Image (cartoon, rainbow, N blue to C red; front, side, top):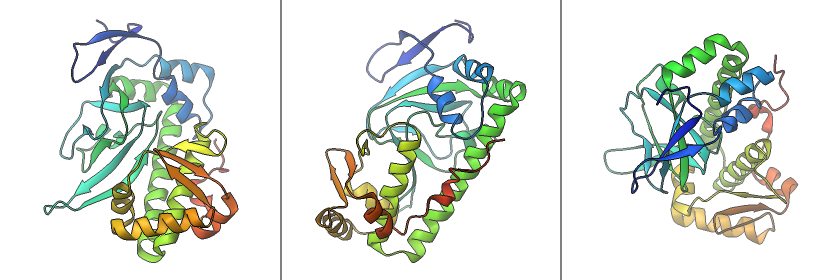
Length: 261
């Protein structure tokens, strides 16, 4: 099959490849449009990228530290997280990812220095680096949007460092919920003040440098104050102003209103 064919392969860990029809990378175009103005031609080019798709169950690694991938992995559905683990097994989660995002863009130029794992069942499109590089050369708007998204990722990492170094446990958790909710809303994944965020208390603890016991205590406090409901893998924000205040959340680091030249 040629890369340019309009059929894509779906892989699962338990079944032989089957044929999948559809322009699954439209989700990537929608995500990139959040970071830069794309023309209709740009969107069509992104949607037409060659890709093979694989399904990952929750907990399975999508890309592993030390890999030197020849393909980018784009989340088509589901959520994932980046992390590194110390030799003694202690894990640090560094970010969460939702559908439409490239979760290993570093692999274009570098070997992977972290692992990406499925947070929920995921469908992931594998796009050859050579195809993406060709598109970026031909479509500078897409390159600019991808570059801006990478810069904002850096801003998010800096905000997380500030939070873990200086914020209280309550502020860390409230801030993370504000960030996730804001980013999900940007991507059109919030409905009636609710969004999917299927983390466990262990995930939250590993992301925020807290013990599970402390995390549980803070979650009960946020619920008791009527700020959130958090159960069954769903986050509901009941009092946005209160949650924002509890997390000392200023969304300026997400650069939501910055120019998209």
